[in-house]
Image 1 (cartoon, rainbow, N blue to C red):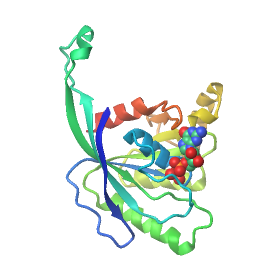
Image 2 (cartoon, helix red, strand yellow):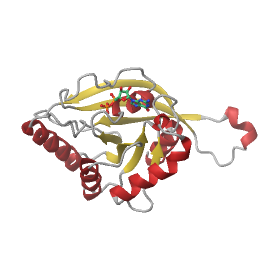
Image 3 (cartoon, rainbow, N blue to C red):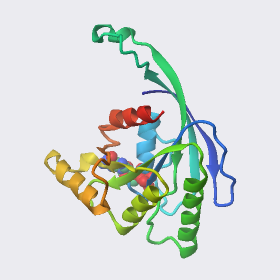
Length: 215
Ligand code: GDP
């Protein structure tokens, strides 16, 4: 996917009405500091539109980014030699940045607000088609991660796992860490896990492909 345009269209706080969007939404969840802003920026080809967390426990909002992109037209008849001439079609969707969880120093009321916001969104969005759950590839998923995984599942979505900060481990450790994430989350066997690095952008095309299949 090539990004043509991105716009932060709606920012929802705890009391805001959620937008009644007509376009497909894909959401991103994960604990604070997991690399969610960095991932969303990498997917949008922007350096810092989604904030990277300088201040943990920052205001909890749900942010809707309106994305216009170009994807190759699916044309079975085009032979690979003619790839250069392949047509592209325009697609539009929302990236939904859900507030990060698990910030230890957040007050109880802040944690409650967080839960209510996410629940309200997962329950009420008519256009949500996929939920990406971000897990740091270096660590065993936490109790909060497991709860989030189950929560997404119970709301009727198959979580797609993005294992972040891929560049921080050796290649030889990748398979072992992916397996650890799968087993700790008790993920269904067919669960998609995409290792990703915001630094090298490794994994980005696979995420774009996954999104392309949803649209
Ligand atoms: P968020 O709180 O989930 O939005 O996390 P951020 O995107 O703000 O990232 C938290 C910290 O991890 C920042 O210092 C980022 O620079 C760093 N970070 C995020 N993704 C990566 C990555 O893929 N590789 C490396 N090396 N650092 C990362």
